[in-house]
Image (cartoon, rainbow, N blue to C red; front, side, top):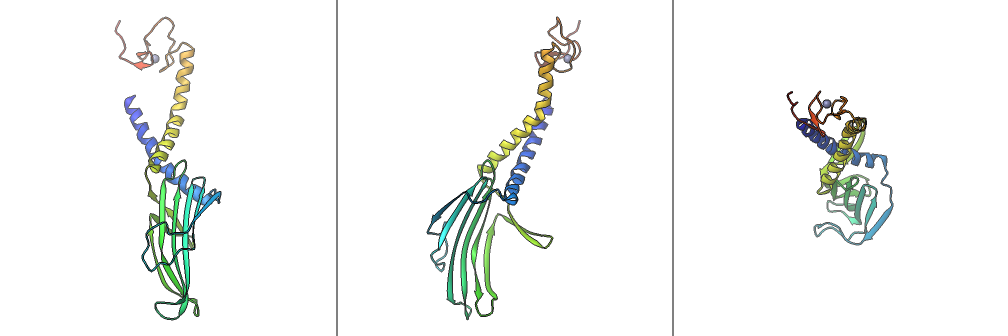
Length: 212
Ligand SMILES: [Zn+2]
């Protein structure tokens, strides 16, 4: 009984962690996170080097299970490597998860495009916690980095749901047997006896069968 319960705890924790990742990606792919509230600030939300210009605006988008911050700045003029072009600096952060934000990812860097040729002459982005992959000739990027305490909260939340699902059928069966005056463990008729003569259960706890 104790061994079974221990196994159930481990199974539910693994299921809980998997559900934390899958629910976050599901939220992103199903686009439940369409804008519900946006907040604007006029500074970079992260430390940046001196050659970054003042940002145009930082947008924070928050909705069910999703938070996005985007800041960008453009400058058009002579490029470092020669020619005229547009340089863009950007910071972008995406956090996902429900009920708490559990996964984190960010991208920071700059790029430059030559206006005359339309060719990208610089592309220098660093990402954090972002898994980028290609599937059927489309590019995808999903956040994979757990953030605390959100990841733990969600894992326990989904593990609890898993536990209830696994425990519910047995609990209902034991309750019905007790109501009918049967042994909750094996269903044997308990009229007039306290300890089940069939399996040794007493008050719901298993003990060794008494000898006559
Ligand atoms: Zn019994």
